[in-house]
Length: 637
Image (cartoon, rainbow, N blue to C red; front, top):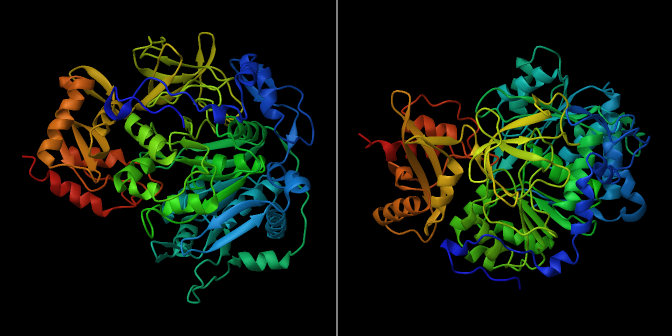
């Protein structure tokens, strides 16, 4: 067993945690192989070597640190890299294991996946879809979604996956922006046992789009009352092209593989176009180096494919390595709150990659759920989506990983395509609360308001100082004094060891008594109080300047009476940050408002706290919580 956490701080917080020797001895990346990345950009040949090229590239990078193109002259096909290349060695190995919301189970071997991807690719071509045409995919986590992604990639048609929970208006807007004339959707799906009629939303979107749309429908509900109209049934399309094979289209390294849009919960959706060569090489290498994936692994990334995490680390990364990827359609607490641990035990999952918001929910539900299952198959744990606060880190480490699993607390964005900040699990010590250093080949810094680098103890905007293979086309980067700089919207600190602690988004900061704090800093302090499961901080404005902050807090099974818990929260914030940072109000709520992908909708809490007009709430998975929070605040005067 790895060293136990000392009792020298709240919940055993300490500065570093070494990875277990048993893991280091078998890790994909060692200190020696990581050191080979010191030579930029030649270091990225190692990533490119993980990809099969139909034509070799002329250079790793055409340009300099001020920008350029990755792997010019190279040609490849992403679908062939994820399917065809594995047939010789593992055609009978599971590529995708799917568990549906009603308990259905389907397993696709790599040979099964090859056949269905080819047949659907042939079907797409029969409908007139050609290389360069954008195909929109609007489905939940069902196997037909990754099949459609890979079929599009096979014929060189960029896909545009739209999260299934988005409204018809959001779907229409993304189809309009991408000029997509083709839509693959489903008749519906199930949420907590209830049918959601997806085709109705898709039909409404088609009406709103100015151009003609050809659609294909996966029949998921077995509901004869749903009429396909002039749509083509997915199964019929496969039957019409049974046994057909489609030669993968050779794509240039910088041809787009897919389009993806930001979620739109805080503003207009932004289109991001990721390339075929650079993106796939970066996805494969980070899956190998950070997630330590091996072909014999069963791996579970709990993200929805509609988000970039699902694209990179549920589909393209693991499948390019020949790994078995688990695809789960259901909720983590349905039918019971031990569902996640049951699936890990039943499928002998080796690597589990999930979001901090999920980890904090698991904490709230109680340790008895993971403790009641055999999780000994787990080798590595990962976190993605937002900063992982130290108390949640330790809970994850102790109760899920049994203190034997390294945790990679990864940072990256839709724009970056793949992980940029993380410890290498076989090389680096971990620091709870910190994402870790920049990966080999990546150079980051933190800058102040005028662009000057800040000291180790200061916060500022996180910037990436050199191009990287997974960068998208048309990245919004800035010219810097010494070349090139991608300035993110994240606030961070870099310590003397080069470890980056991400404090939150730039708009997820608050200013109190002239001090700017990341909401993550305050929320981590509050989450360190026994009885607190999760916290969200928002600023309360009066006449313009920020006067104070409110803390919205959900509790776990250990929570004491509210008056005592408020005192503990105030004491904790005062002792870790300062008296000036103690929230004016602590509002207890059963849950925090979350999108269907599990992200905190902080904007909504700001609107409620500031008596503002509530914006769009269609992305909420728990809309009933709005009224409960408003009721809790109704006596504020």
